[in-house]
Length: 334
Image (cartoon, rainbow, N blue to C red; front, side, top):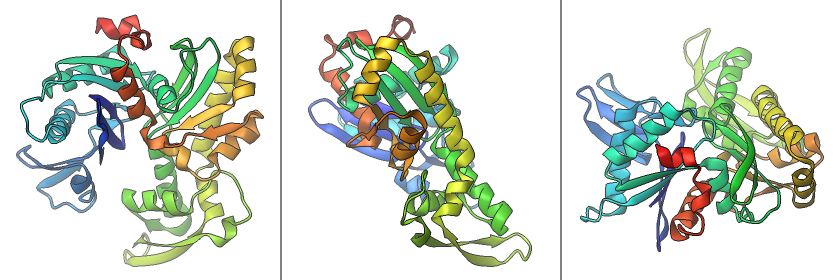
């Protein structure tokens, strides 16, 4: 079983079956700590629960923030995938951010083992994303991948099934959503929820100007700070792009720093092949154009950016003996 344990979504791959589950990483519990809902059903409760119910996201910035809730979530997903059958002790490959600490790695492994995994192998997300995106990581050529998830952005240069250099910044989809939320509060005096900010990001945001930007608008409903009453305002794409400028610049700078440190032979390969963009953040309109404009290198968006990491874990599972080198010694020692 391959798992992309993401801040925003969890995806599960089963050998021979492909991607069998894609659910938000959210758990709803009551005041006794009993789980009421997991995944999509729990996400619908975010911001809408009574006092005795909490909707919790157990992962923050790409790592486990609440190990007990993460364990409940993993158990639920493993049980669902196996449909309650006894075959619930799988070998698991989990994609995790490359910049996490040893303690954070151990927390992921422990949560998976407690959830019923027989053996657990950890793989760096950029490596898994590159494999899932179809990059030739086994060849002696440079491949650059940018994986923008919910909690972290991973930038890595890969060659011969290994990471030559990488950088992980804890600025990604969640920070873009928060930037929109703060902008609506400061500029429009409108308090909106996380789900509304996410909807704005999906429907009208862009990372780079285009001819059609001024035509894209959206009516946003929230609570007006001054009157305290519900209010509707109309926003347009350019102002949302402006609100996200700071977190986007942090991502671009991480890409530039990685390129500056890349060995010249691999840099030449990257110029020829281009940069691959994966993760949910790759779906942000104009992001590939922004990175290409700032670096001077063509940027490709993966065919299925949301599934790259989980597809990579699945490919590693199905070709375990040939691809075992993707697990570093430090991972195996955990």
